[in-house]
Length: 263
Image (cartoon, rainbow, N blue to C red; front, side):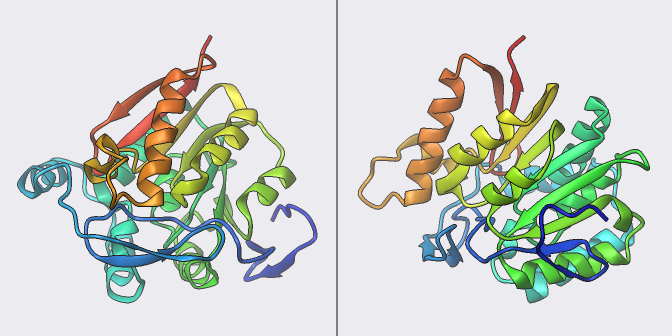
């Protein structure tokens, strides 16, 4: 297993421990809950409706190729035991990520925000046997949970979890990466984006989750707008104005933005 420095190795040397400051995946404010930022601060999200009606979400799910039973078991255990289960990517977005790996022919993937490991395992389904995913996580409980499920999957040899500050972990990783998935603390999206862009292959792709944030980004200057809302709105404005890239925002789940280098 590849090491990214000289951290303590945990479980088959696939989790590298560095510190507990970054990254933490945040969920959009679909229900009232609390989560932790990159600095360890606790923040709450007020209730807010999703952007896609539930019956349409269910129709999309019914017309998406079903996942294997062990992925369903992972999703069920995530919802039953982990806080903020809304952070789970789910079957539809998981298949989208898998399709992106397949379509790009990605061999090296970087993920900001592991959570329960569902998205990493989704992407691993389309990796070639020698492909690798490096996934970055702040929360030791999330990392241990994800590692347990990765260990019993067919893709244990393709996924490495790095536990600690994402930007430090990225510095220890050699590029280029063919696909980068950003789904961590929203206040640091701009920093993760710059770190990802610097190590992206010429035909690489960045996918960024939660960019519609349940619609809250449409009016980020309201008195009750969260720091995450304001950060996401600023991030979206930054990306669309960035002359280095071409982007498209998709209305899948809570918004997924795809970004590629401009030729």
